Length: 376
Image (tube, rainbow, N blue to C red; front, side, top):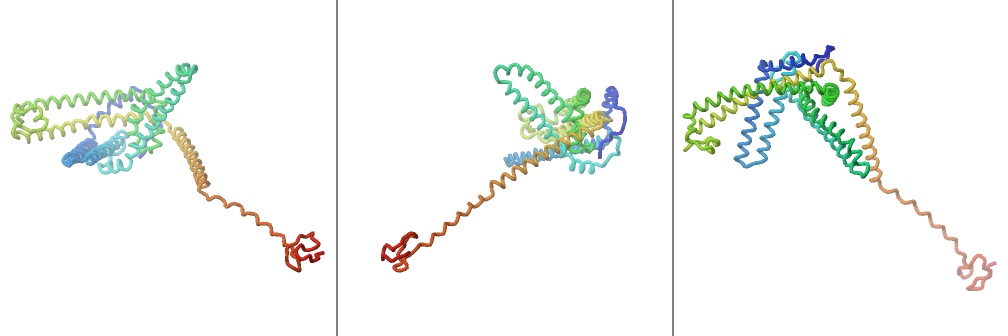
C-alpha cells in the first residue's frame, strides 16, 4: 500500500483549504466510526477493569499493566482508523475492520520508531547548541560569538519545535498509513519541512480550528442535553439528599439511588466517548488530506537517496570502528609470545688432566703440578 505520486499540478493553497473542509465527510465513513468507537470503549474497559483490580489488590504493577494495555488498544485501534481514512482520502477501495486492524498490528510500530528518531534529532540539535553556548563563555571573544550564536540558536530551535509539533508528529501517521517505511517517512517529512513548512503549518492551524469548532458544537449540544436530563432526573437520582462527597462516590443516603448514579455515570461516559469520535475522525482525515496535498507531485527519490547514503556512511563507519575494536580486543587478549629461548650455554671446554695422576692441568703446563709428570 503505497502513496500515489502521479504527475499532477499541486493544488493551490485555496484549493487545499477547500479540500481540508471536506475532512468533515469523515463522519460518513461508518466503518471508521465503528472502529474508533470500539477502540475507545475497548481502551476504557481494559484500563478500567485492570485499574479496579489493581485498586482491590493494591498492586501498582497491575495498575501499570492496565494503563499500558489501554494505551496499546488506543494506539493500534487509532492507527487502524487512520488506515481506513487514508484509503478513503486516496480514493482507494475500503477494507474490512479486521483487515485494517491486522495492517495496523503489522505497521504501526513504525510510528514509534519515527517518533523516537525525531526526538533524537531534536536532542542532538539541542546538545550541539548547548556545546556552542558553552564555548561562548571564553573571555574576550565570548560576547562577540554569543551575539551571533544567540539569534541563530533561537531560529534553529524555533523551527525545530514548529517542525516537530506541526509537521513531524501530525504527518508521521499519514505517512505510515500510506505504506512508507521508517526511513521513507523520515525522508519525506524532512522534504516537507524544507519545502512546504509554512503552508503545512497554516493548514494544520485551520484543521485545529475546524476540529475545535465541531467539538465545541457537539459537546455544547450534549452538555445542554445532559444538564436538562440531569435536572429532570433529580427525583430519580435523589440529588437533593446527597452531599458532594456522596455524589462523587455514587452513593446516596443509606444507598438510595446509588444504582442510578452508577448508571448515569456509565451512560454519560459512553456518551462523551461517542461524542469524541466525530472530532477524532475529522482530525484524522484532515491530516491525511494535508499529507496528500504536501506530497502531491513531489519527487522524494533525491531525499531518500541522500538519507540512504548518509545511513550507509554511518553504517560503514560503525563497521570500521567495530572491526578496529575487535582487532584491539583480540590483540589485548592474545597470550604473550614466549620469551626467546635462552641461548644454549657454551659447551664447557674439555678440561685437561695429567695422564698419570688425573689432576687438572693447563694447556701451557709443561709438568704436572701434583706428580711432576712431564706433559710436553
